[in-house]
Length: 201
Ligand SMILES: C=C(O[C@@H]1C=C(C(=O)O)C=C[C@H]1O)C(=O)O
Image 1 (cartoon, rainbow, N blue to C red):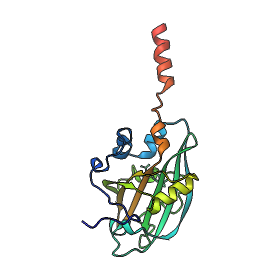
Image 2 (cartoon, rainbow, N blue to C red):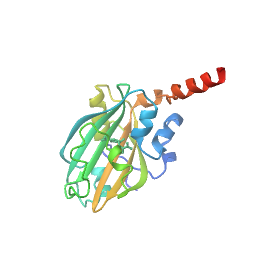
Image 3 (tube, rainbow, N blue to C red):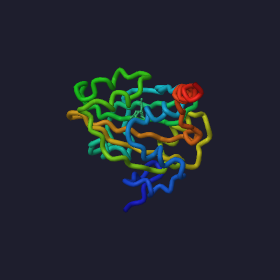
Image 4 (cartoon, rainbow, N blue to C red):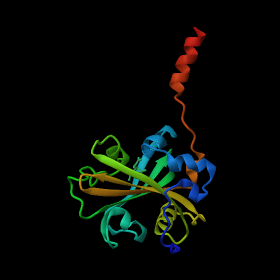
């Protein structure tokens, strides 16, 4: 196997290949909507849309979205914020050949979560998760670091998933930022209060 250049990552089919921090594993491998999981771990969740525009797909995503050579795509990049702290850099690409019938809600998403349109749509088929370690030269490392205005961390861990709907493909890459490790599951204090009150009566 040819060693990937720094601008490209090797995407593995199993998270064990990353040797990622233990506390990151459940974020990397979790099924269901990441948006829903982040909402469970924060009081306030927000999608900050950085841009959604035509772009050239990254070298290591060309084949994944079914293109024979790097071509033009619709590119959406976001920061997912929990209690205003950026915890995930999201990068989504859709080939220009896709039609509105393939992804009817994609073009007008704005600051609504893409996940809210994917999960629950019976026509959407979700592929397997793949995982990668992003190093300094990878475009998504550079973009995530720039969005945070921070020096580049040595490594960021990412996952990506291909979604299909009708004839369309859509590739979502989620780059997990260091602050995600500080999130705590928000227990529903109302439920606990109710139970406590009942016990005291
Ligand atoms: C795919 C999902 O959508 C999330 C929302 C995104 C967006 O709004 O661009 C991008 C990445 C995802 O983490 C999800 O919630 O699981």
